[in-house]
Length: 337
Image (spheres, rainbow, N blue to C red):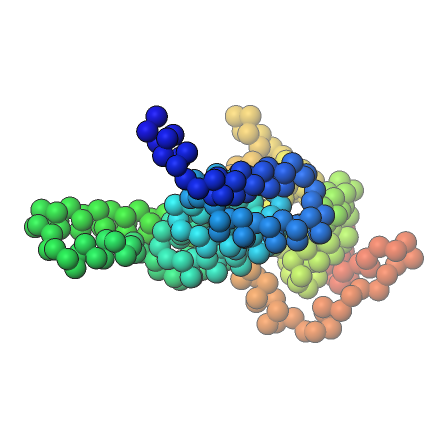
């Protein structure tokens, strides 16, 4: 009750500014797709109203804007640079903060803002690298804390407690950044930065495997690897099927499609033991990261040893599809069909 009376003692002008600020934010929230002029208008109004309002109104306005899908860039950076007591919910959850803004705020505002950014659900590798490079491990003491520290010496027990808390905060922040940097929580379908089959390449590989068209399959495989036809032929000529399985796993092909392809070209992989095919045993024995490293090593060796002429686009046939690969290997691949 006392706090309510204190609120009434505030100048009426400030209360009016609080009301106008919240009304402006609420009106902006109600726009599902604000136009460019509406965004500019809001940016012009927000700064002066925010500066004239109370801290409580500022917190409420920022909390509301943290859920908006579209906020003007100037307002976004302005809010993210406010004291952490106000900016925290915006830094943690706003979908309007792009990578460059997050990095700029982390570099200019200190450890408290960095900790808020680290709590975001989806951080891109670019932001993670920037956070790791900043090495904001130590919490920054505020002016009041610094003044108290210089005005009177802390007791040994209080100093020990502060040191323990500081080390705990250091370790917590370090572990969270390491976890983000190593993508501990990366989903299995996250192919960011990895060589991946396009939907068209995937469909063509399955189609040519269905018809056992080895030459055409090798042409698409070479295109998928950005490598020579010689490398694709060599992979397919491994009669165990392990090299092709390694390649398909490195390219991110789905297991069911990859097993179908393998069994069409290597019939022995279709044999079952205790209800599990040899192809499944082979596929499950391969690790995606190791397959990726092995295929990249094949590609590097291929680029060193293959002549430039072998990378030239094959002449189109009369039916518009790729021409056959080299005669010798082509005969071997066609004989599998």
